[in-house]
Length: 184
Image (cartoon, rainbow, N blue to C red; front, side):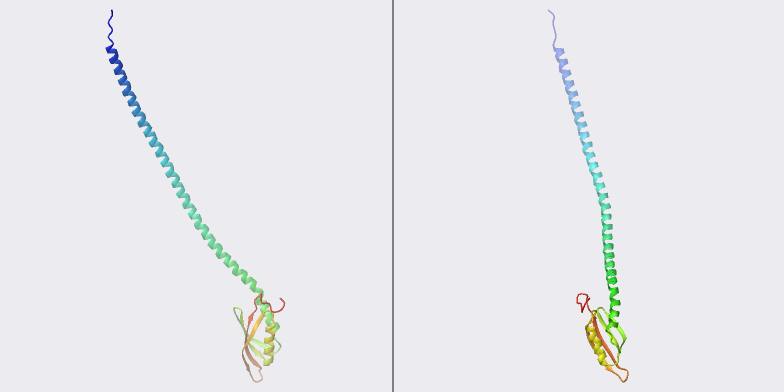
């Protein structure tokens, strides 16, 4: 009967299993380290991407802030231009008013009354002149009262002189377009 020694085979199997276990354990450690390294690289890449996005957003915000400043400046310029346009429009609307005022002064001035000075402050007018008589000054005041443009005559002073007539000073005001003193 042959004799079979199974002990070296079992010892050899045990050594092979131990070597395979160590190799598997080593491979698992290497795989875990590789996985950890890849995970770290992936997270690091995500962080770098987010930092790049944040930098891009900061740059875009800076550009938009500059554009907002420019828009605000343009709005201020626009407001100044609109104010100028309104002033010009007001002046253009008042241009015919001066012509109408002088035309109305000539119409209301009776014969024998001569103006030496006429001044305007806002809507208030001051007349200084000479009249042949004080009744002509009264007629001038009545004409002002019935005028479409002039209103509220007020006599300030009247001085009668020898042979020269009466020198006078009176005030009146311009009617506003809504007052209407007669037909407009």
